Image (cartoon, rainbow, N blue to C red):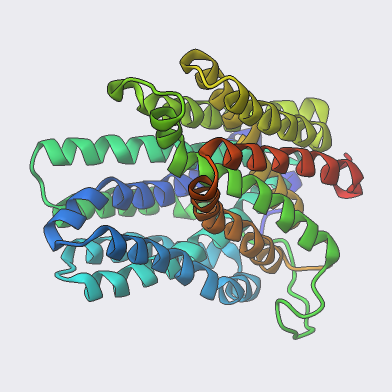
Length: 388
């Protein structure tokens, strides 16, 4: 194994590009499935209630295997695990295109969540290893590659629908693209520099308090992120009263700024430090959501959603980066623990928005989630681990 100090600048850049493309591959597979949900729903005659159940199975699969994913990465290394699961993930995607009824699709989606989680833990652990090679924060740019893949997958999905190509052949094309990337870039993945502890214990026994706090911060950010994914269009439709053809502006403004923030985030982390960037992010989350609550006008809300996009952009990458450098826990295990808590926010955030909106008003929901930004700001200020 090459010492991190022995990598040349050219080698470092090639490694970074390779890992970025693995993030991109994972995002492309996920967004390809998401882009064809309406088609699959129509073809299989699935009701809205059944679709809700199906969409819940994937995160259940992810949560059920958090501990296993962490143990596999800890034992075999992120490089070895990623090289395998990144090929299985799009293969399961192809199986989604072959599903003929509700139960077949439900089974495949559960395993899509299982493998997706293994990809998530291994690729983020790999990102931590590459940060060690660079000696500085670059995690946000990796997550930026995932965000760009989301746009790309949506555009490819739109093209496939317009060309009347069925979901199976669409997903086969995605599989081929990911396999090509694997052959070109797998040799540039970085071997783990962390030795697994010989002490055998459950991933969740006597959890590190710092990791729990990191997970809570991730929860607050991902809950807000999930709420914006699922409810920004509804907010523009019901509260802002935007024209039908402009309802998508809310979602688009959020997504564009989130992706942009991830690509510039590493620069600001390097200049101002993780703590200040995270605190400012919390302030942006709070200010953007409250602005949309008190001034529900089209232009103001567009600006507000852009602020929220910037606010959530760097939180999870920074949290994962910090968790992966924990000296007491193997990076794979640490990331699995933090991801478990964080992902609950992504899972629970959108339904919580809906329950509050039904009982009161959608603006009350956004006002509550605005407080998440303030809580995050206060928590980050008290945690020494964010101080550089």
